[in-house]
Image (cartoon, rainbow, N blue to C red; front, side, top):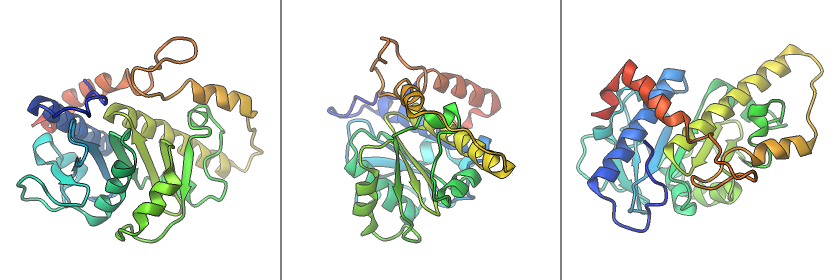
Length: 263
């Protein structure tokens, strides 16, 4: 079950917030499962339903496979902890995630990662190339932000969000990747396909073979049929499964593996 991203104009019930906590903890566990972690660094955040000024972030110092629904930290846009907790938060996580949540009301979930493939592509002047169907899902949807060093300066937030604009994906040059999704399930699915695209690009470039690039019309067609806001239809009148159908299946996998994320 995904949290309803439209539930932002009314106070959240404890049930809605708890479901958001469960989904966000699941997202952390999935990142650990797939090896998309950087020890205790990098973050995934989610806006609390009905409370636009509050979002949930991982406790700094815990590995991603230790994150559960109850130990997520609730903070406001200014980085203040708004509910009692024994855990600190990471300033860099606050700076990046608060900037995106403040600037993008549609961003219910924000993922920032330092994966090996993501860092490799972030160092490539060409950026993300439309080499595969996974990559073409993001054709015309990727923003870029030049590195400003460790993300712990509040002054960077304005420049970061200006570069992001209305794009769902941003490559932070010489740093990593960022995804802004309309739901936790959608954000995770975008990260999955982005990571697949970047791994394939690194492998293709390493092969030394001449590469083939599709024409822009094909890339546009695949991109337009891909990730969309929940509840919206594609041009053929159907709902894209991307960001929708995978999430319940992923939760079932986690429940078989270790359901403690729900606690």
